[in-house]
Length: 388
Length: 113
Image (cartoon, rainbow over all chains, first blue to last red; front, side, top):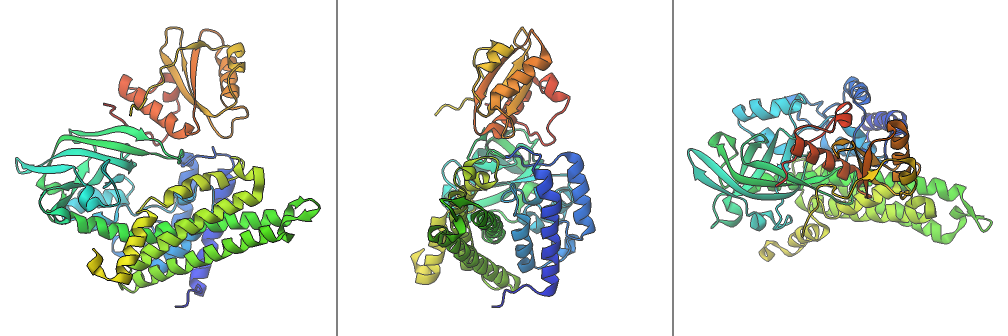
């Protein structure tokens, strides 16, 4: 496969690169090093710019008003958008818009009216409620939140953990067990309004990532009507799984973007910094670190574009997405670590973005399926499905 | 495992003398009136010159006598700051008066058990 960007892709890449360097990075210099949001007036100004560029809401499907950019190009742009301090988790501070949750595009017309369109208009924010205190990597077995039939609807009881944005959302997609005897075929997906009685955001879950946080949720006799079932009863696992696989590709792209930014900083520093009468760049120990960075970045980029290309061609891409996520999150972590080592003491400070990337990149080896689960997915492909 | 949501350390008088003795680390703090009613929840973030010390010195200078404070050293100062604001809102139905003048644009809501 040839992953050399076309002239049209290169034009878009250059446009986004300029935006990051001329608009985002100068603003970021004035913000708290752990900030995840821009002042409202800057957000509005920059969002108007991305709309004028024709790149607002690039992940929204064309039929819902998105700019119709294929997934390979979106990966190339996501790599660019991540190349600033907050870029790993908040690329360009959200000024390119979001697409909401992928699952909500599969909703029925009534649900689309109530949730999808308001989300695309920026009037509602969703959360994704899958992981529970009992585990996140094996949702089919770990989900203990129960939904039981009552009064032409369902009563939910249980808890969710590590749920981002639930405290600020107007609704969420929540997975609950509707048939205890059926394993992964006994899970249903519900849309829960956050003002539903019995829905509680109990606490903030503090992590390495101080810029933003996850939450713990409790459902206590939380009743919802049948109209809140997304898809079909007992078929929620497929809804979750499709999202988890597809999400791994942009997740990998963000890691690559940050790795590239850290690598460029390390190269610049190595050429400039003199120790014991010699530039760091002339020392073999540093050269080898930079070479290893280059290899990690190229490897991850190749596999991520390969996964995106397969997705674009509507071929199976589960294994490719796992390889992309694995190489980008692990390789990206190594690149940031080496860049810090090359920077010495300065690399540890909040004066530079490296320490934030180091903390946030560590989470990437666990989020969206840990490295071990990615390896399991790849092993199944290699060894055959009879290992399941 | 017990998880502490609220800042419950004893109050100290907000003066330049007490603020000078604070660590230069990052963290969060609360300012209260003489009766202990919280007026403001703040953070000493990564751009503060001497962390909590410089932030509380500034508060003491700007507010003058009659206030109290308490601090928590915390590298997760941003998520902890959001948490303290949301817990205060849940407990009192509103943000502290000095935060309400300029609330964070994306503050969520908690209902602590």
